[in-house]
Length: 286
Image 1: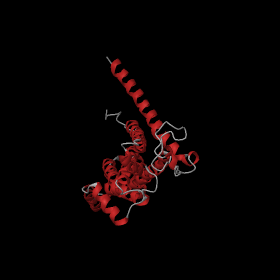
Image 2: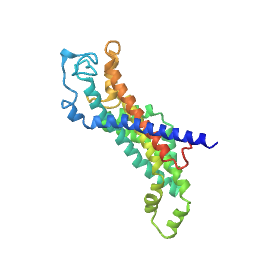
Image 3: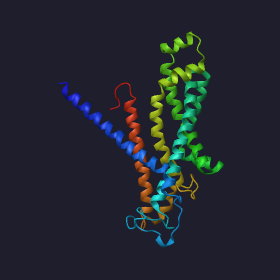
Image 4: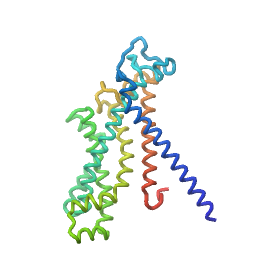
């Protein structure tokens, strides 16, 4: 009888390996292409050739993905634009983690006033629709890469604070924490040397998934004219530029959209793989 569960376990393990490999190929491949974009496309995708404007894809070897209304190579702009989208996704997640983890540690460990203060502030922010927060923020401080990153940090630190707080509440009264208090270990050392290493797994998983989410949000904001400067190539900006040419030049929008989809899919696959790999209960989510 145990043979069937064993076979299912092996199939599940092979599926997870395939998920990891596919995630690495998609997300890692895009990151490598973006990393070497300056070498691959020295002109930064800004070379204009009006004689080749709106060339369809796979017609010319020099323009595999075709050209846009100004004759610029779509492939070059997709790769160059990925630099902005990935930069926004990674930096915004790093900032949200830095703020949210500290807030969650303080709220969960000290409880009382600090817990009430942080959590009520988090509740108020969660009650605000993201699009309303984005419109208000951009209207006050303006758009641009830096302000888009700040907006995403402000909107997402709450997720990490609530996650970390819940984990700290389950750990703060464990024996190893009580022993550290009993021998006089400083609170800051307990927070960052004893508690933080025991909750880093779920935080890493959420980080991976949120990078994908932030790439989508940056693209959506830029598409709506609320994000990155339209003069700077980004996936959202390319989607916005190509919407008026969907009838006769679909490739101007489709290829940036595919780049977003494949990158986000790769990151989500890696996030799922990390979740199951770091799950001490043995993949209970399945």
